[in-house]
Image (cartoon, rainbow, N blue to C red; front, side):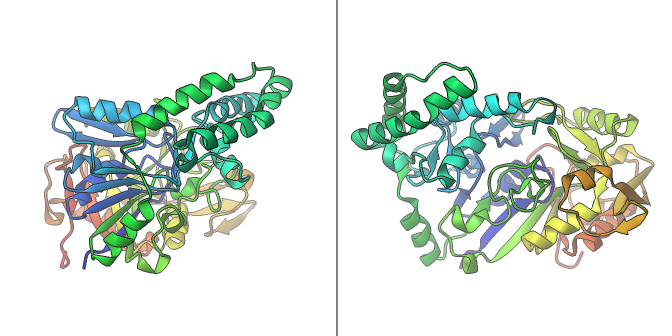
Length: 433
């Protein structure tokens, strides 16, 4: 029997999910994206080629796997078609090995306009949205007025739903934000074109998933963003609009009891794109060293989707313990360990100090989190190149001690370690190591 494995990021996203999913995918017959939208950017380095996937599951790079865009994902059809075309141009098979749930919601033009208009209206209180319409699309889904691919594939039904939506939103765009009303006919014709281009991929994915479960095929669930951006448990309101932590079941149709285990993914340090509290941020030489070191190692601390520079800092053990517990992570994958080779000593936050009191729990109030003072434990660095390491034993003792310290904070063993950007630079720890 194949297992159902959920991989979820434990930080603010950008943990390297694309690389770890790619390393795991060859062991699974089905790979499913279950939440988020084109605001995700999962990167895989294969030799000289770099692939950045925004909507298509990373499993697409393994032609023997069925890649499914689940019902929990909100999909910009133009972005998806562009991504598919780009993959095909580079020789990647995209045919019957890709399925798009007919229950997935469609990102429409008014979603993108509202996303940008609302962000602009916030002024200095901006959230740092990507402006891709993700939040407004999820809002329409919750308000029960969204359009799914099931509706978009039916011309008359799509027209009726589109007219009903624009009856609501055109006055908002004009009277609240001073924008031009959207052209109903132009949008209808454009999106009907997308519907026909995507028709070969649109399917009722629930039977596909259920058959895979019944047949005992291995299923890998690919999360997007990170748990500290979760709409429920993240640094609200500086969060994404989907359930990063609990979305795997609702976004795929897999019963919660059928998920066999959870693997949590974390960087060896922390990074964040956009606004919001970041207790261990190092807006100084340390942060610059992290950014410059990862570039020297072939990576970039810039968002794969937005291109914005990532804020960098030491590992936050309080936040890691918070998300590892919430996700139920039974094991860890730790990425970019090689970047910390630049430091003589390495710091890890183990508690917060706020108003003279010591905190070991992650506060719900983002304003309070912005005021905490991190309490650090300092560990010995290893200051040597570990990019050629291929086993746990190849890592220097100080690096192994660092990873064991991370284990003690998260309450879960490290199973995988990434030591470089290449797809082959991943160490799988043996059971006796």
